[in-house]
Structure formats: structure tokens, C-alpha cells
Image (cartoon, rainbow, N blue to C red; front, top):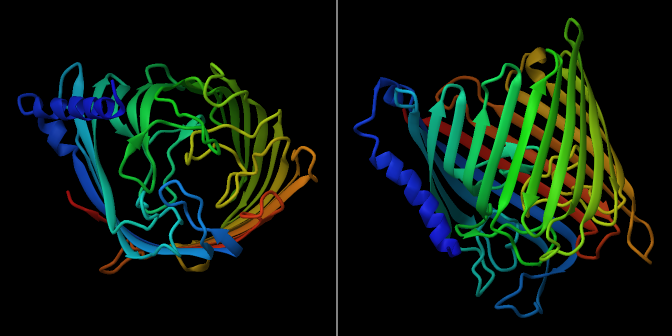
Length: 429
């Protein structure tokens, strides 16, 4: 099948299930249905601290330069979820509608990742969007979903850090038949990136090599006790890379208002088929230790890369690494990095809905071949407030600030970034 044919087949299969539902619908299908519209207003400014080439136009090298990227956009995210029909096999359907509208941009300002760029002019389009449908089937405690999905597991996490989310086309299975054990498996054929309305093959982050239309994964999460959960997952992006993951999460109450959480993660990645992206060799050990004390939490993280290559993951997805932060991923070849983090919930001080997060990450020992050792650091601050009552109850305002410095490349060695996000969700039914 061609790319278009494959994506259409998935969507039509899901919609076909919906058309067959009228004769099957029961109270639970309607009663458990819900729909919402999220309004997301997003402003983003990225200061490069030096001139940077404008995006390429029609494949030609740019001759113009800019010192920053700045865009403002409005997003509309419509989500609808049905319940399940009665019977041995419960059937349902979900739908997702996405629309992004340009409020302010231009060729000298584009490139924040908020808006889809015109392939001919490299300017942000006035609007873009996408529709997706998902058929779902439930037997006992197990659920199979086919269609448009936003996976969240250690080997593949859809990115939702811009105006519209990244989505994948394929299927996933979650089995909960055994107490304390969650089995997960899935297969995806295409991806729609955050600032795009097009479905395309999945590529290796940071690589311009050919993509793949086959990503598969399988894994399990098991509660060893009420405080300890262990995980193992295997994934393969056909002809590009394969990956093993093992994780352990330990959460221990220490007394009134006190907790200790340890989150340990290990990845072993290698090439798969060695056809598209060449040799891949990476082992990533990372973990986070967090102490909670009432409204405060203090975290320390460590991340170490071993092998000849950077950590591999699907382009623009969220790698499951503790030091993957607002701008950097701190996952270059042989890199070691540390994180210090602090969170504060102001509810304990009489301001419910107000939260603060700040962190500092520093990395060194980056393998740059004959060049000097690579180094980088990033400082992030998030300040968020959600209205607790009144006519606009639930309206969220978030300011995200980041400062990034490195000696890795001239075009990315210095970055200052601000994001201002207003979000409000309306329950339709």
C-alpha cells in the first residue's frame, strides 16, 4: 500500500465500525460517552542569540538570516469518546479533530514548531488541521484500539508540547487480565507531526535518512509490591533501530507529608536491518530521586550515555529520559548529565491552582571526535495557574522560560526561550 492508502485504510476501518454501531448501541455506549473542546492559545519566542539561517525554500540553501523565531497561534482540539456496547465484545469509537490558526508569524519569525510551514515559501500557513478516528474493542479488562492514537509508554511517547499534539496511525493492545500485571503491545505505520496536517513515515531523530512505516513494541508493567513497579519493553523501528528498556519505580511514604520516589531507567539500543540510518550503538542509564515534603519536592537526576551514537528515538517524540527537558535532551554520544529540580504547590499557602517548577541540567563529556569535549547546560522555570472558581473556572495560564547554552554547534550554542500558554477546556457533553 502507498502511504495515503494505508492511512485511509486505518481511518475508514475505524469509521466503518462507527457506521455499524447503530444496531449495537446500548445505554453504556451513550451514557459513558463524553466530548470536550480544548482552546489552546500559544505564544512562543526563541532568541538564537546570534544570526541563524532562515528555513530552506524549495530545496535551496538560505541566503537570509534571523536572530530569533517568534509566533502566536490559536489551537482547537476536539475530543470525543464513546462508551462501549454491551456484550462479550464491547465496541466503541473515539474521534479527534485538530485545527491550528496563525495569529502572528512571518518568514523572518517562523520556525518555532507551532505552525505548519509552506513548502515553497517556508512561511507559516494561515491554518492547518487534521481529523482522526479510533475504533476500540473491549473484552473483559482488555482493550484493543485501532486508528489515530497518542501512545504513552517508555519506548514511544507522543509529543504534546506545542499548539497541536503529535499523533500516530496504527493499533495498540492493553491486557489487564492478571492482577498487578499490565501487558502492552502495538504497531504503528505513520506519524503526523505537531506542526503538520500530513501523515508520513517515521524517521530517526536528527537524521535525514529514509524513514520507516513499521514501528512495533511489546512490554509489561508489574507491581512487585504496593510501593515498587518494574517494567520491561522491547521496540523496533524497522530497518533503523531496535531497543530494550528496563525500569523500576519505588515510592515510599516516610511519614506525614513526606515521600521518597526513585525512578530508574535503562535502555539498550542497536541498529535494526542497518539499511536506512546506518550503525546505531547506545546504552542509556538514567534515574531520578525525588523527596517530597508537604508542598515542596526536591529532585536529583543523573543520565549517562554509552556507545558510539546518541540516544535513538522517533523524530519529535518525547524520549523517556529524565534529563529530556524543554530544549535539550542531553543524550549525545558518551554524554553524562546531572539535574537539580525543585517544585512548589502554593495550595499549602492559600493559593490553590498556582504551581512552580524550576530545574538546572548540565552535561559534559560529549564525544565530538577530534574537536574539544562537548558541554551544555539548561535552566528551566515553569509558573502555572488554574482558576479554581468563577465563570472561567479551569482556565489555565502557564509561562515557560528556558535558557540553553552549549558548544555543540554554532546555530544552537545559545538559546533563550519563552512560551506563554492559555488553555481552557469546555465539556460538550
